[in-house]
Image 1 (cartoon, rainbow, N blue to C red):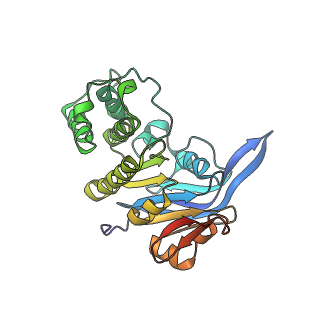
Image 2 (cartoon, helix red, strand yellow):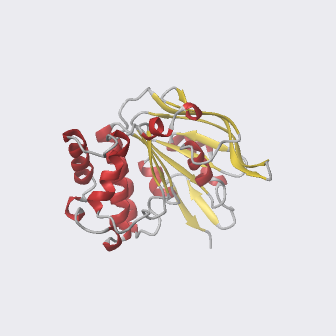
Image 3 (cartoon, rainbow, N blue to C red):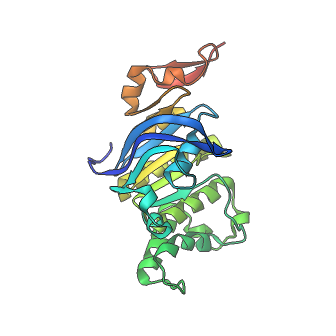
Length: 264
């Protein structure tokens, strides 16, 4: 059960996201309105090509929004410097680390960069945060290994540990279960749920594991080509929002079990 939380960490208002082509806006998704509460696990779901990654990249400032506004802890995203933003949110993308030659400990230590001095010196507080990140993600025993030696699941846990070492109130993950088997997909999502409960951080993740997201998320954002809805999974099920995700002649959704199935 989600801890009682009223503080809004991120607020998106009348948001349109997309790209600029020849200086003209190419809208991928529009009329986006939602807020993310402190201590909540939020699953972002939708069919391929609907704009989940575009939305995430816009929320973290990696690409400019077309219109509307994004507030993080009451401050406009556009007004934050890169350093200020790095203390407010951390990101785990599907791409592998820039240098897989780093050890896991070195990768996790990079999360402390926003707080170190110009020499990059680590304080006792930094060391404690790194140790905690390694411990809670069960990557302590991997600390000495190079990233290229890790399995996909281990590398994903190390990337999450790096985000935790950054110690931001908001963590965003783009498809954190990509390339993982069923056990590790469930493991990663259960880890994210545990982190919200134990740390009070807000975690937003995009995923194709809709069945698992329904079971574990406090809130879900459902994206289709015509609408974006944000609510508790039980309310989204009752409203029929999951029925619209895929062609009905191929994929069916059972409201009683909260699961998708292939129609024969």
